[in-house]
Length: 420
Image (cartoon, rainbow, N blue to C red; front, side, top):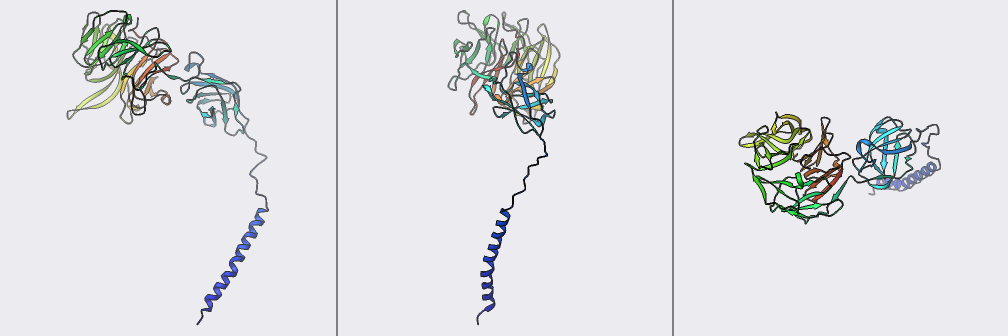
């Protein structure tokens, strides 16, 4: 017997499906003939469009009315800005800067890492329909540049010193190379030794350096001197001159050795004994020490605190150790490894780090990364020149290349007593 119910259902579907498709097409065509409702509201009025009158470098970040990429701050004056910082956006060749403060007539903005002779400056304000564009070409210079022409295949470089004429001295293997202003590095003299540690300029143009347990020096090429060398009781970490010409030398145990260069004699100061000293600097009659306070746990040294300390210098003696700041707040992952210290004339402290952040600043009681976007770790040494430049030895690691860098700080370094 035939299944007539099933046959009827197939017939019904064959008729109804084309009808449903035709109906859907009809309704779509009807809908397309109607205009969509516009979202434009003619009664809405936008905020007044911003206007830029001037863009000038902030005098706190430059000494020569120059704006530096990544570290500079500019003051923008004009009209119709927002007093709410987040409502303003400032672009330099399309790259956003960081708005630090704002009023309806002034914006204070940190520059992004953009350089050029005629950077376009634009301001957008929330609720305004159009950008403001500065009518003048605005120059932004690089804050950091490579100097000396060192390349990866050069011998390993680890330290640097500066004289009062702007010349730089960099170790490369057992030799010292000189970088005269705007020149490539050339051979200067030989230390006759490999693996030297910190190096600093001393009186009469003599470069002092430490190597393992000894302090030594080299003279300018036209000065004849027998090998000058003095061993001390332990491995040495860093040293610095005080205003009387005494050299304070730090040992790995935390002992400080006040050293007289002419007689090659020294005394021993135990103020920092037990501190694993990383670097030291004399400033304003005080010795600044960066180091790790360690305790021995099950025959293993455990770091309890990484910190900056100070002691007053009286003659060749150190006063009581004072804690200036702990570094824990900037050492979240425990990898902080300070290699060097530099201090500005105003007393800001800069620390070079083997890891990130590569350069750290301590000022006004606060620690923070210093211009991290334009620097890379590891930093092996710092030396402030006789002007506004801080010189940096960046060592090789991974895809980071070894270079000598010149960072324009917009301020001079603290008095350095080693130079004449």
